[in-house]
Length: 460
Ligand SMILES: *[C@@H]1O[C@H](CO)[C@@H](O)[C@H](O)[C@H]1NC(C)=O
Ligand SMILES: *[C@@H]1O[C@H](CO)[C@@H](O)[C@H](O)[C@H]1NC(C)=O
Image 1 (cartoon, rainbow, N blue to C red):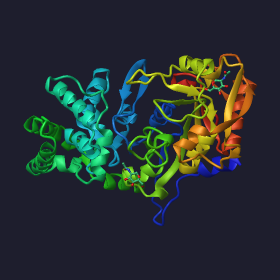
Image 2: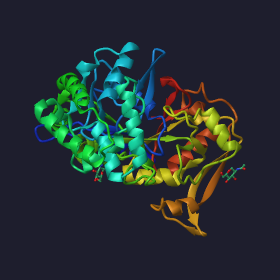
Image 3: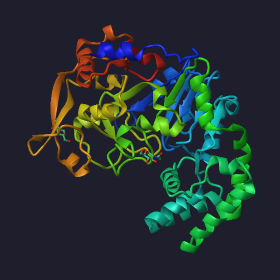
């Protein structure tokens, strides 16, 4: 039952033989296709965390945190960097786009972020996103148009234009990592002449393959050398850092996932996925943390479903219902401005995310967006050619063909924005939440009904 799940997961940390506390990391993960509002949950938990970590992704994700009506934007920096008492840690599983990192820190500093350099640690095993990673991508996929695009980018960069928000190079950097010609933080901050040699060999290789490629290697190196100096004081042995944090005195450790379960390279709707491990395993591989130190895992679920870009979307409502969710929920991509596709909550999909992640509890966000709907549906089963599917299919052709079985709920047709306790919610909204808990057999711990910190109603 859900009650058992709660008490099990709220057990205090266990102690080892010497009676020194063993800390566990609390994890926040997206349970759908992203944009669930993880930032709000992370923000709540980061307020009293001692360490806030990023374990995967790059600056290709992002969220806004509003503190004292100042909007801070985070893409690569853990949002815990706002908490002056917390250490922020970027693990080995993250790809570090250096111009992006310093630009982001600079922008947030202008808004009032202070002393971040003293509170940020970066794993020496993290990979860096470089121009070479982008070039490597072109070689691997022999993708001439991309080469053109990259040349254009390089031209812009040389002309001094700002590239920080294009969020490119994350996938390529991961390809490079897998191909074993990636460049890591530890390479950059040790003997620069060794790094320079590696860089030149790689660049030479690319230039031979693509004679038309015009990279100013010296300029690149000059820039990287500058970054090396700024990065060096932040770099640490990430495995040792996490080991000490987990085995030392009692600490609250928070891991903020980027992207979401259905965008995971292994478990997502491949190939429309991101390049990293966005499910719970990414915490272990992306930080160097043993599974036994993974504590509570919170899944963030939006009260309906959205998806960016193409690909199968079984509960999509390509009509007035979808339009309403889209406009009320302000479902636009943060960087692209693209409209997100919208549809009903799909619990087949969320249950699948739970199978992979083993959620301790759920944060259900944006419930207030459903306030005006007279009738609300939840997808609860898939069939193909009349045959029920036991779970979420791997094959995207199958996913395109599924028929969704829905459970229909009466709407509550009143505003929930001012509600601050579960009991104050309309009974229809309570029933909606309880149905989700029962279906997933996971308790809902928070329900979001607005933008502010206070609008995250805590259920237990
Ligand atoms: C993600 O996990 C898979 C499977 O464990 C692993 O092979 C891969 O290297 C990981 N990817 C990244 C980018 O860390
Ligand atoms: C809305 O569109 C979906 C498919 O996109 C369809 O299944 C559903 O019946 C439509 N709803 C209405 C009210 O027309």
